Length: 81
Length: 405
Image 1 (cartoon, rainbow over the protein chains, first blue to last red):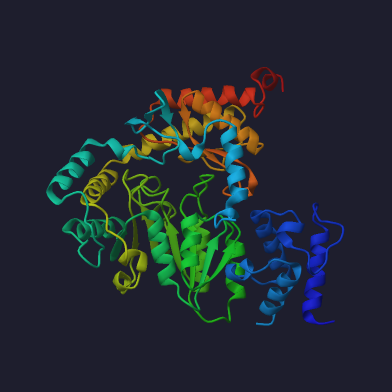
Image 2 (cartoon, rainbow over the protein chains, first blue to last red):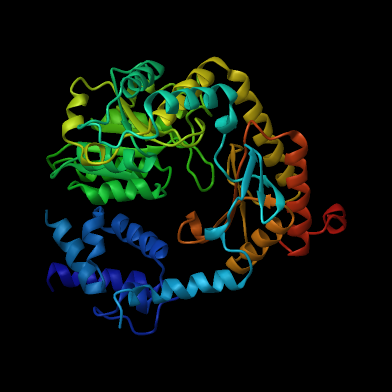
């Protein structure tokens, strides 16, 4: 299992514990739309992810994130820095 | 299809807001009577949401200076500071601001928004890192977006989270710039500046404090939260505005960095916009003299702020964490917030309706800002109107039920 997959698995696990999480969460789940999160909730969720992986996601990188796969890619990239 | 189709969801939210009654975006004051009263649709309103903290918009000395200046130098400069837009008074105001803050240099901007836009986008460049409080004002977010530095948000008023994020950057090259506000505009809470200054020192970062809502309001000399918390020496840049306690319009940045003035030829929002008109510069010079010499204004402001904060707390409203001139009332839902705001307008009280996502924690707010110019009876009238509407909308319990608890 590669690093990106491990990161994605942990993110999916964290999302599944959110109260509003849909039953099926996959790499293609759209974070804002499918999880029903507004911009503020997305930010709070991302801050929890940042703590879990001990990274900070810069705002320009975050702006490009739509799906869980995108987020996993960004986190993996930041971890590898 | 239209290029504006992307705004359909926004238009729908706006229409829903308008359907509920008044429209916060189109409140119009037909006649402003004083810093604390205006006429709107023929009705007398108490102004409780205008950021006019010291009530200096009608200060006779400031008005006289503005009138003198408009007669002497005309209605506008018609040019930018790097062309024909620097007059003696612009340079004089910069010297006065530098002296007021005890700093080497000051730069004027045409609005407070532009001060943040200009300074943030310029001083941090590619390869640098800006760390901003998550609850920062739009001008801070926009200033960051205009520049080329990497921008990281830290949890609101959380120096530990800030330190964690600086630690994560420890092996990364580039300068670090921490950005916080003196008083946050939505809840009126102050930054834990002593602790943030300590983090700044630990990690060798630069610190910028936006004192827009705290200049003339906090500190024994009115120099804001930096003065009130005794950390002025740790603050590398202070950004502020003339449109609140100084009663006009415009912005500035002061700094002690020796090469600060190079920004005059690097900072595009400073270089490519018309400079402040002479009348504004003249009234601000006078207002600055007033806030330096008249600490009674500040005392009156805080007396009024405490009167409103304590009065609303006693009635059971949930307010921001600290009694400051910004007093925000938490609303249980957007629908109730809109109804409450409209009912207050009908009762002759104007304050600000703040809806998510512009508010922290996703709660709608009724945001008021108190002025030194308010009379105690105006504050009491506001408390009583807010209380009776709060009871009828079920935001607070009626007095009988509270009494038996």
